[in-house]
Length: 299
Image (cartoon, rainbow, N blue to C red):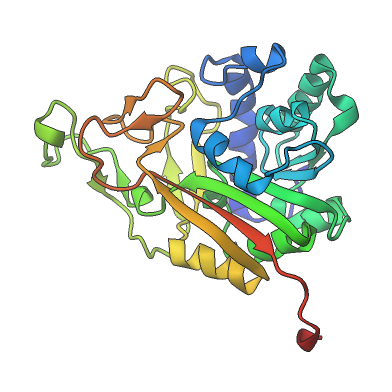
């Protein structure tokens, strides 16, 4: 439940995500048919990389999914045998996740908790309780303190436990759609316009945004369109994880993402959007990391 003394970024972003839950559940963007058929799948990027996170499969693993939204991906992992806990700060999303788990007969292998990421240790007091922490797509851009995010991940992981993280590439978040009337270059000769620089890659101030269109349903009328978001350079994120006690296993950059980040992108046919021709800059990134055993010299 939202607190009256919570910071503006949390209050505003929570209201936004509360309002989009029914839009997302009803949209074609989130295709729940495979999940309901017992054959839930993730995006191709995750499917290609997750065997490195769980090489022996998911059966018996305890998985914490941070910022799980309404639990679709969480329940894919439950279908594969994991014991999952999904955490999200939107109560409508958590209620929808619980209902979906009941519908799918996965309530015995899943639990959904309503809490802000920064309150996760209080809402879920289970230190070193998880084999895997999983967090993907549209996550850290909503969080102001990336070092604390990394410490929370490390706190939940068993020694030797694994993190899987995927999100938009921070270099892509520098760009936005070309404003009306602004000079613009055609992308690969047209007809699409190359996105225009809008934000500094190294911006430290919160970004005050007001975007009427939703990625899942551009025609939906959003009750709350204002959000406050944050830039996190790639080096900052990687260093935060290392400082928190994790070792990086891989870092990958991708020329596709699972939503139309820019209007110039085209669907690839597998749930991802990519540049129409030349891959001008990375759109997504992903990484795997392992929590290092505690160093006795640090005590």
